[in-house]
Image (cartoon, rainbow, N blue to C red):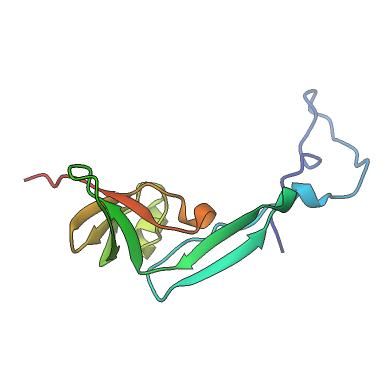
Length: 130
């Protein structure tokens, strides 16, 4: 089973049914989200249209964290996922997406990359409120 992004299931502007005039095409095919979680590193390589490659991170326990004050980037271990504003369910399950707040030994960091699209978890340290 896969995701399909064709529009033949939609209705016309007048509200009438659209009649099928061709079969489904490969370029209309989508995919399910990677839903990156903590664990031993596991990646999935997918060949995309135009000869491009998309690397999906399924599980990872390291992130490249940048300190905005010094400008230095370091590979550090992720302790846990604190918050994910993208989805309440992701928040509960500890799924890492862009914008998720993760806890590292260096402090709290916000994920700036898209792990399900780019194949890497990049984050930037955020100031903790006291």
